[in-house]
Length: 227
Image (cartoon, rainbow, N blue to C red; front, side, top):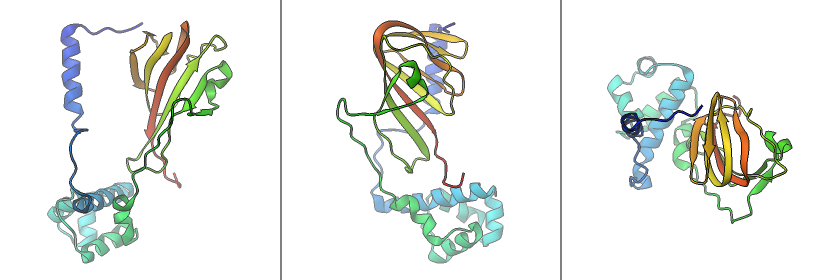
């Protein structure tokens, strides 16, 4: 069953979304040399949280004041080498670990039309064709994103039982399908999109107009090598 929002509910939902999305994707960042403090602060906070300790715990272990630690984690101050050495010992990481995010390359992948990598996935046996449109491993965001172009033809079968971790966005390009998510059904035509928690069973329930093509963009947390 598809849920439709009335006009008031839709406006309230849009307002809530705008409030939640605090990042400005069009903001201009400071030059890289001014982002070093932010990079160090990000790593200090990440390593502290990985150990499951509070700012107070870290302050006690290093002798650094709470106020100073807060400024370091928020990138508001450039810590001295002595301070970084104290943090390094308390967090059990090499000094160079604090500069990892600053020094990491920011990659991009360009795929020409029709040149996506065809992969086998769980739906392949149901006649679903998957073309991977790009992949960047070990990126700086902490999130893995898998963008696919999925094609369904007369040789394809329905498969409404996909289930995996992360979030997924479906954007319909051609054709028409009825897409299931949990106990809801969504008739999808070109231009329609569906964004959902991929841990619930989902997938094409009915193939209405073929061939059908849609973008499927899956995102999930990046796992460390030792996770």
